[in-house]
Length: 353
Image (cartoon, rainbow, N blue to C red; front, side, top):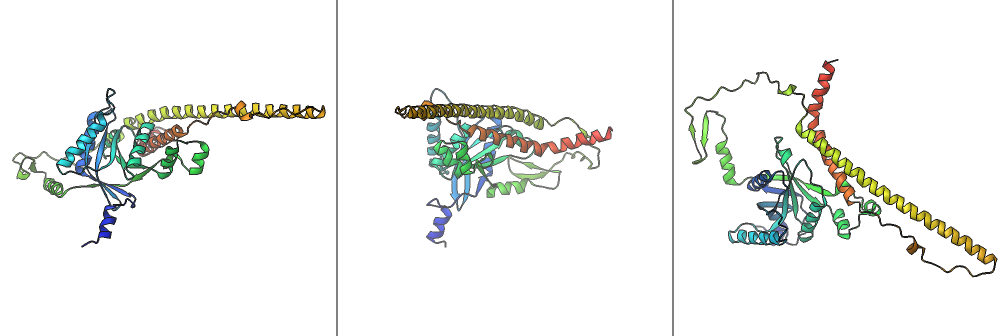
């Protein structure tokens, strides 16, 4: 029988064990996927319920949040409280452990998401954000990412100080805004039994989902396609629509990055211009005081030069970080899916020579 010390460590009552992985129930995954696909292309969010056990964040339930209503800002909070109360009444985990959000083409790096996740981690230190990319999941494999803001970013965001000096001192770049946690999907015993029931090697055996019993099909099964049958799909030279859309988004994001760089360059020119005015004023003042000293006059009174020549404050570099991170996401997606398409184009180009 485990001791009280072992139970305290497993349940992490004092909150000292850091989260190193996320475990999602299969039903939670299905709910997230269903909610996100039904609302595409709109961005939707939802709440995650569960418990952290020995460094593993176990998510056992989720529910979608209503769409934003401008008439009442408290609707979302009231809905969340009511849902948690209902879950408690039916003996379902009602401990909030984070939230999820849908995205399309990996476009989720924005200040709204950062602010929401910051508030979650401020209130719940072990909360997590689940990102579901609907477009990427349509390529064949479900795409789920578990993200948390890093401690360095949390500190800077709390201070609202995203200057070049602060970023350099904290060694913060777009690559360490988030820390990604591994995700495992857990099936209940009943669901595992159902999967074994559905799994069969005989194609002539069909399954009745209403009674979960198997029976032999009387109809003749269609002839299976030979593995040696020719397939010309691999010779299609059209550019993958997913890659093409990623290229379009990448170009738009690069334009945003160029605009952000232009704003920063304008600030640098403004600072340099004010510093030149300040230096010229101090030089003239020094020359005038030297002339007064030679003529036996009193020097000029001291003045607050910094108040006379105000250097503009450095613009926040947060937008630059988020845009750079978004560009990195697009580049990784293009690099992953563009390989087969570019390979075929180069192969055909060599054949035409």
